[in-house]
Image (cartoon, helix red, strand yellow):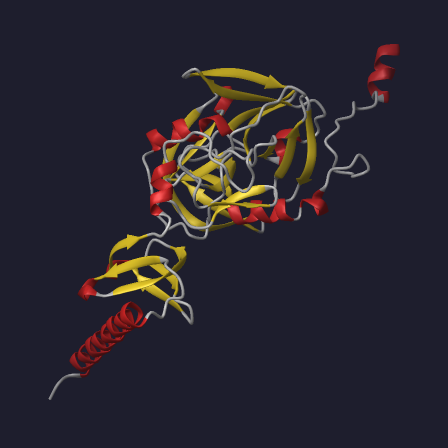
Length: 353
């Protein structure tokens, strides 16, 4: 007589085989009976099965596919190859530095076009792009990362669209009225530093430590920008990297891994990473290896090493989607203007004596 343990093993194996049979049968029906309404992405599976549909999302361990009448979640280890409907368009545009998205003037950083969608003020990829090396991505994304300066602070930021809207941390501009932004434009194969001083505060959220700025200089060109990705799609241990200006050292790149996606601090959830974060990195982007912004770096634990934190991309997008609720106003008690302290009576009396 079989032991209960062996029975469970056999039963699980039976369920697995039944599931694979159903999956193979479904793939055959889709291939030969024409269930899919239009050409789409094709997943080639083990056991010589295929699934054709529209990929809705990709995670490290699974892929969700819309086959028309239902959505299938396919484990990654069952997929041998993915053929995308727009793959040729991506390859054709991968070497262009300026790619049209939603409007003729819109430009995205190199290689991010074919699946980039314009969503109001910012851009977000409909699905995650193939991973690349940090070396390639730094050259591609560096122009969109800026240095934010005020009389009392220095931080980083990044453009979310070509019109000069950029994200940084609230604490970088808190209490300041004079803000300048340094941008490194790529011209003739080299970087040309340009400082923009007509910078307007559009919106800010003190509690989420986010601020939206806008460059209003008359001679401002169209800026390179970076798209948002999904922090929820990250896996613990996945490699990420940051670009910023730690201690004023502009265009500094640091790399690490994602330690956790759900680190609770002061009532909010943050991404924790081993990527080195230092004063001056605040407000800069945290990228995945697809070149998408998955977080905004904003703090570290100074008593230890490799304990950096970033605001998840989903929180940043919520702030941008609801920016009207956080619109800056001089009547707002949390406005950035810093007033001089009134003279102290104690000091005044001491001087008279």
